[in-house]
Picture 1 (tube, rainbow, N blue to C red):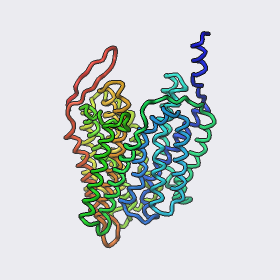
Picture 2: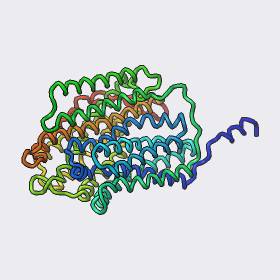
Picture 3: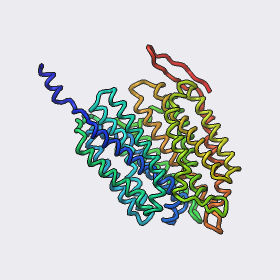
Picture 4: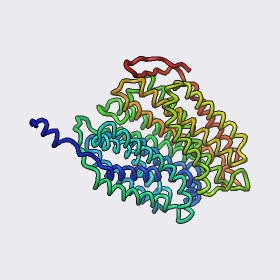
Length: 480
């Protein structure tokens, strides 16, 4: 063996064993559960904390926004400092957030806990880094698929067990129990997963861009909550909030355009395929975010009016088919995009969602009306956004795939968060003075607006370049 071979043998990362893979899988399952428990429990959390719908929307959105910011940073930090090292520290932050949420006496403390938990989304790219460094390509693909499947399965577990845990113990345990599993699984990862060497980089982390994006989203969402409070706020204050959001957003754009290694490479938006995909993804996701908030609220509304008085357990069971439909749509979207073309699927997504929400605005007298609407919109949105991801990945150069797809993922998360916040604002604006609860007309307005937002995607469907690779690479244009 020559000196080069000896050096390679010494520096080659150790193989990862099945116990370590199991620890990563359990961690992904626990994180998926922790991420999903809020949706069925949101009406209960609002009641326990004494907050309205727009404030309640912040509970789920705080996690989403933190995840949107953490996702593009996690991979860079993992490459620079080592995937295992960053993963363990990230999970320490998640554990602190879970503990804060479990002990939260008020909404502000719960929101801080949710923000800290939101960095959990960065665990997936870090897990991929570890698996890819310690396994051969063929083996790593299978393990990555397993980790993603367990993370997705965790969302179903959270949907099913949030109600029984909250009603059998207390709502605090829906955060506490998954956090305990996260702590145990992280300890196992720290012991079982080999260390991976960091990759030197000449560029620093884009902390200014991270701070400006976080501030823009936070001020915007808090502004929506403030504007819809009883009595509202003075027009000058509204103008000041709007100017602050605009200033923060402008500052973020300037910083990202000048940064040598930006958190989100906005230069990718100059590519037609990318900016159209981002616009479509945002519109579809915003409509989905509105549905995400509206349906649990109507299910939980008192049964002596337009609602059904559903408990947290009931809501979880009623929303479970939609969760399964969303999982299936992710696998169907890529296949359908290849066969029918992304523009066709976006049109179908817009038409199905708009028609479903319009129908729901006039027909929502039975629980199955809401369940069917949730299934249809979840499946349609999943197919549409996955098809856009697939189209973007095949329409740009190979070296830009990671940047472009991460931009779409961030756009998707922001769209869902803002859609949910707008839906909460609509419900708060339509409060019945006699009961303090949203009037039925507020839900009707929300359903109609969600349908109109989905229909807006039809305005952005133009030509999408799709590049397919077989023996040689060709390009074709698919026109809606």
